[in-house]
Amino acid sequence: MQSVAGGTRNIRITVSRECFALLADAMCEFSKTTSRFRSLRSTVQHACERAKSLTFAREDVERFLSRYPLDGQISIWLEVKPDWIEDYDWIRHKIADTCGKVMHDRVVIAFVVWLARTNNQF
Image 1 (cartoon, rainbow, N blue to C red):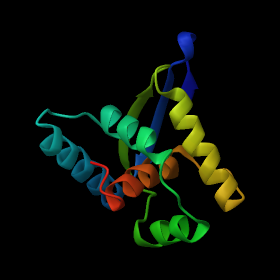
Image 2 (cartoon, one colour):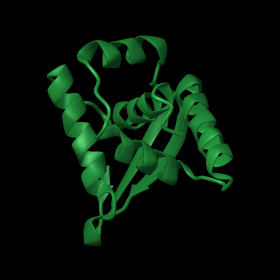
Image 3 (cartoon, rainbow, N blue to C red):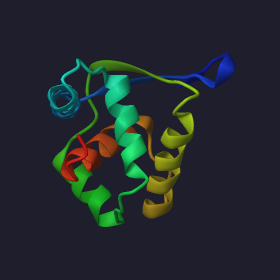
Image 4 (cartoon, rainbow, N blue to C red):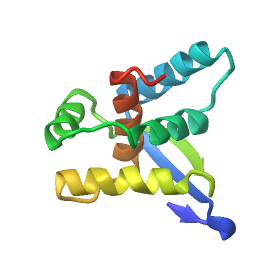
């Protein structure tokens, strides 16, 4: 993970095919719902905004992790800009507090998208 001036965070992760499919399906679903093509950034940003009103438990994170292997070779780049970095950090800390350990960005990104999809937020 790399930070640059202005509070923008550039996240580079590698993910599994299953995780990539989850993210791509969410982007497609969000695009269809809004009738606008949506990027990974806008999809994750939307999911982070919606996560504030959603509740989840450690069991939800564990269930997600047992269903979706995340480690893989597909490279993804995500730019988290200042206008939504607080939402991203909020969900990251919420997951850590809920699970009792810090989670890698790939878990945070995939879980928040899965959480939004599971709760019909797209």
